[in-house]
Length: 235
Image 1 (cartoon, rainbow, N blue to C red):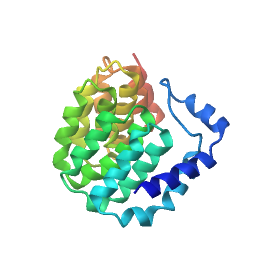
Image 2: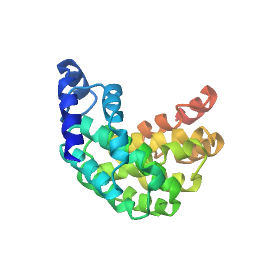
Image 3: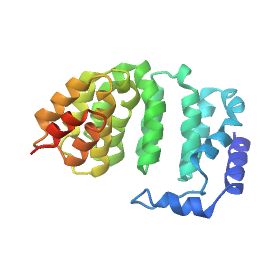
Image 4: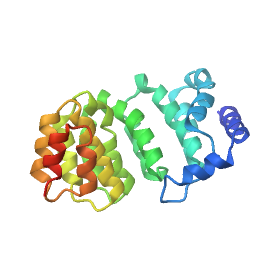
């Protein structure tokens, strides 16, 4: 395990670019830790260790992911997310506690939140939809990343028309949240949902537009036809 982590970090450090590092910070309000390696290259580096990772038993594999998360580096988190998604065909119900621990303890910016939730946790919930109820509990959390996670976990399933009722329930819980990153998160969830359920999302937006923050509203209607956007934005 330690050999894989050491080799990955050495490769990331070799490819560190101060210009990429400086540019990355511009996308975040909070201070981030980064080597300064572009996402595509980070993924390429991670993929060279896929076979070794998949040869581990799952407990050891998750421990490796957690060790990467602990560093706080953006690129390490991206590698951890790449690896944990590789295990999607072997997810078990008990794994939810592992993923929840990562959100609670290590997610500290929108990029690591979205990467983990879109793929790893999103795939888990598609396999075990009874955990949608846990997402609704996350939506009521005091933790901003847990609240955002409750929404962005459903992005990919929602694009395929899944979990419509649950999407609206989570949107209802987050509707008046004052955090712009939470607003963008559930707005994005509604936008993804509109790809398969445009009429239902439009009705939801029209019903709530007087109280829905404009940030969330603009995200939600982004993929709709111009005439519907005008109706939704009209005061």
